[in-house]
Each structure stands twice: as C-alpha cells, then as structure tokens.
Length: 274
Image (cartoon, rainbow, N blue to C red; front, side, top):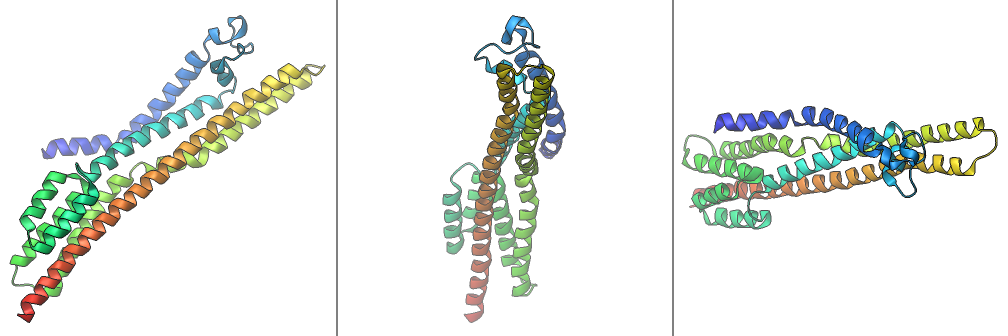
C-alpha cells in the first residue's frame, strides 16, 4: 500500500512536466492538420482565403500565435479537470458539512472511537486532518505525565502539521491556471498586433486599396484576441472557484480542530474542578 501511494504521489508530481509539452505538441498538430486542412480554403490551398463561413480556416489564418493560444486553452481545461478531481477527493465521500457537524457532535459526547471510525468512512484530506487530531486527543487523554497545557499544544501541533502536509496537494498546479489567466490575454493581443501589421503591410504593397483583403486581415487578426480573452476568462473563473473551495475546506478543518482542542480543554478543566 505504501509503495502504491508513493507511486501515485510521483505520478502527480510529474503531471505538469509531462502534460505541458504534450499539449503544446498536440496544439501544433491541431493547428497544422485540422485548422490548416486544405479543404477549409478556397482552391484547396491554405495560402488562399478561407471558405465563406469556415471557422477552422479563419482561425488558422490567425497565424503562429494560434497554436500557443490553443495550447493555453487545453492546459486550462486539463489542469482544471485535474484540480476538480483532486479537490473533490479531498472532500471525501459524503457531505463535508454533515461530516464536520457529526464529528463535532461525537466529540462533544466523548465518542472518540465513533468519530475516528467516521473519518475512516469519509476519507479525504479533511478527514485525515480530523483523524490525526482525534488520535492525538485519545493519546493525550491516556498520558498522565504531561501537563495539561502541553497536551493541548501537542494536539494543536499535530492538527497543524497534518494540515500543512495536506494543503500543498490541494493548491498544487493552481499557479499554472493563475499564470495562464494572466498571459492568455497578452498572447492574444500580441497575435492581433502581428496580424494587423501583416494586414496593413499587405494593403500597402497591393497599391490600390482592397477592402475585402483588409476586412479579412482584420477579422483573422482579431481571432487571436478572442482566443486569448476566452482562455483568460475560463482560467480566472476556474482559479477563483478552486481557491474558494479550498478556503471552505480549510475552514472546515479549522472548525473541527477548534472543537477537538476546546473539548479536550473543557474535559480536563471539569476533571480538575471535580
């Protein structure tokens, strides 16, 4: 089991290093052989104008920035799916809100064994942190050599250490989505500027103004802006969704940890008073 867990961790750690180059290669192949298919252009020649209403050909005319933008879009979708699966598994099998509520009730009743069993059923990062706190709670309850303050600190420390181990897994690869949200729009604008330069240069060398060629050049250049803004918008939405979900998980961990520590302190105070 430990070897299998280590293998999974290694695969997760190398996920981005494998996926990003693969996506860039796939994006170029899509640009070259799907968008650049001769059937999308007049006369079957990619150097000609796209067929009327053929969006694949129009996107292809956006230039070499297009495969980069396609790569950023596919990366956003890929890493969003990966984060969704990871964060969903961190919540556990059942409702996280009901799990936290039930654990608090069981701890207040002193039913630690049932609370630990519930953590085993729930699984996930939150349940792992809560279980670590409960196990330390039970260990400190049986330890009569330490002072009460040190016991409370030991429980708090165990919860904090387990949280620090679990949180990086939840936040991993979010920086990639955040980076894409920042650079996708800039990449789109760069493609548009390059396309506009190309369109006006062609218009200048043609001699007589060609309204059709200019209109096609501008529409092709703006494809980059559309792809960049669309990709950036998706990345921003997904990043905000994941960060807010992680905040909720953290709040649940803090709430359960506070209940465990306060219950332990209250029980010890009652014992001393008695």
